[in-house]
Amino acid sequence: MTEITERSSCPTRASAVIIGGGVMGVSAAFHLAEAGVQDVVLVERNELGSGSTCKAAGCVRAQFSDRTNIELGLRSLRAFESFGSRPGQAIDLHQPGYLFLLDSPESVAVFEQSVELQQSLGVPSRMLSPAEAKELSPLISTDGLHGAAFSPTDGYCAPESVVLGYATAARRLGARLLTGCAALGIETTGGQVTAVHTADGTIKTDTVICAAGAWSREVGGWAGVDLPVTPLRRQILISKALLDLPADLPMTVDFATSFYFHREGEGLLIGMSDPDEAPGFSERPTDDWLPRLGDAIGHRTPALLDVGFGTGWAGLYEMTPDHNALIGSAPHTDRFLYATGFSGHGFLMGPAVGEVLRDLYLGRTPVVDVSALDAGRFVDRQTRPELNIV
Image 1 (cartoon, rainbow, N blue to C red):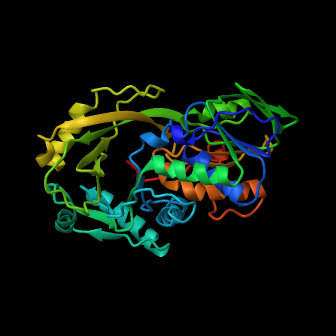
Image 2: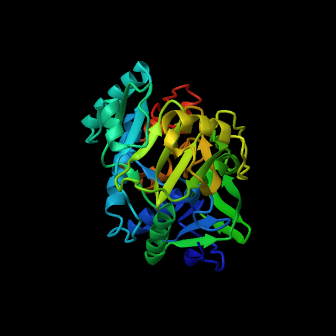
Image 3: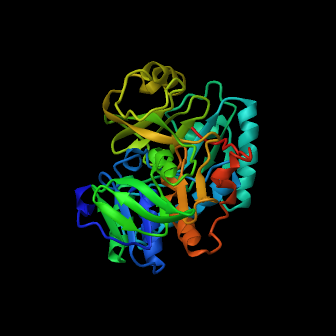
């Protein structure tokens, strides 16, 4: 993403240093600068969005089982819908809906409860019969389905455009976003952040915002903060062009297997989790998951078995023990803020989380109550699993 590259001298001071140039980092930079915070500096060791963000499927939704996640997803959806005017960038947003296919009475019961909660918070989701699901997503087989859940305002957009929009606006408002500038450590004195050490020099500051994604555990460790984030490879394939794809084909998820697809140009973007994937930082694509993917395709979308694939890639999920994010401020290291561990739904929450980080920095009540996502919940064993994930 060379069009948003900034390689200039490293400043010696900053009001806040953001570590990580994915969607969380650039969203935080934009929202802080928009609020009038001066001397915001973001450091990214590679290019903006080059970590997990621009390797994501780009899906956006508010269909979750957890109230906080619903609120973050819904607020972000509204921000994506108005992204062309604020911050000002076309992001190729498509909202054909998000369809979860459910193959057991137990999963139907879970989603019925989730839909009830979603509707109470303003999400237009609803339960569907298998036949209604096939009308929306005609590529599927309804064999074994007991029901489905659908929300018409969910969809997908272009992650790289979201990063570009936030980065451009943040710089216009005075923030400095430095690429090719690796953070190397955090200096603290008496439980107070005092500086960030980078490959290009030391930046004196009293506030650090960790938005380092899968690499956050190391960054937290520099400040004596335990952020239980584990990297896990996920892979995506892009099919060759397909004839007669519906223009409004929803993002379709086979919940039992996690196999999903949505339109990508004239073809499909396809993904699925691999339960045998070992944690680690490797982003090298492999063929190990393909037999399981083939079985899922054969069962749920047999018409796709003979479709060729043109390209694919791998990226990293940032997993936490309960598949929920870590958002908050460290209790024993003053002014160390963090937003990480989104376990696959970070991109879609980027706008709202940037607002939350702004509010935490300014000492205001956050626009969404994220207190339940504090990293301290694992110490207190107050986990809250998110059920609607793939």
